[in-house]
Length: 175
Image (cartoon, rainbow, N blue to C red; front, side, top):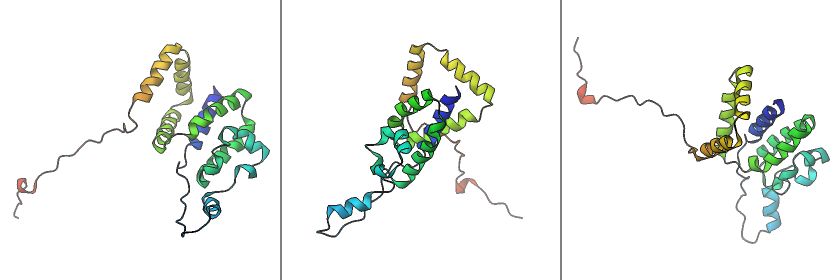
């Protein structure tokens, strides 16, 4: 249970940075592609990571050098916590890592909000809800997952609209 919550926390943290790559400045005609490539790379490169970091971040190996600096920083923060995870937590996290890396900024924000909402509950209530979900039959879990995927990403709560009075409807009072 605790490792699932930790994994969710780490996933939200990893998802926090922007998904866009660093911008590449325009090159003058005739400029070499090596210069363009060098400017688009942010450090550290995959080959510059420690063996422990590469082990933790293994599923990201093919895409690592394309990530921007902020995104790399978030993943490195997670890699630092990786050695303290349980073996099952490590396995589950590495299985989910590619999916987490592909989240859009909107999906990352939704994930962060869901996490904040879950952790605003008292621990005993959060644990009871988690247990209730785990006790559901697999087909019901799949139906709930499909329902969550079907929700529009922009399903933000609507604000009440205050009616605006027209200027002609207001009559000034004289003292």
